[in-house]
Amino acid sequence: MSTILQAEHLTKTYRSADKQLTVLDDVSFSVNEGNSLAIIGPSGSGKTTLLGLCAGLDTPSSGTISVMGFKLNAMSEDDRAYLRNQYVGFVFQNFQLLSTLTALENVMVPLELRGVRDVASKARELLGRVGLADRSHHYPSQLSGGEQQRVAIARAFITDPKILFADEPTGNLDEENAHSVTELLFGMNKENATTLVLVTHNLELAQRTQRILRMRGGKLVEEIHQMQTA
Image (cartoon, rainbow, N blue to C red; front, side, top):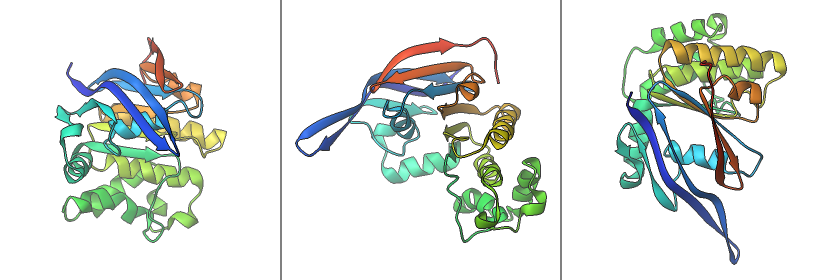
């Protein structure tokens, strides 16, 4: 099984006034293609920063990150954006839907950015799979939080990503919606054989993955291999 994500000795520091703040301190791990991984830890432990670096949304102060065999450090921002558009899906805590677009149009955006035409039928199919076939022409303000996250999941999967990064995907949802979104996320992930890397405070969600990385104070302090798979 090939490695799809490789992080080696990642460190991220910021200058704050006259002090240097270390958010990540020498973090290394890898993820094999098709596997699922959760990153957990208290607020301020560096887990969201780590996810952003692995997704190429930010660059490390030192260390290297490879996705699909491409070294992100050696790539320009434009090249990293192209890599994300071709191979990466995202699901965020605050949904990040475009308020002026309908649910259908939001799902269509990633393929339209690729220059693909006639993507509406695939977007409608995905909205049907997430149970929102009858909400395709509603705007985000007309949807509940759970519905907005379902739209975001459909948008993430429309490009058939090789790897999906999810940052607190149930963090803004009530218990019932969190459960249904979890089932949907892991179900579609398994169906599409996508690699999943997620950041979460939700231990129940983390326990659905094959491995858990525990962060504290910017360091990777524990790695847990789990018997069950999603």
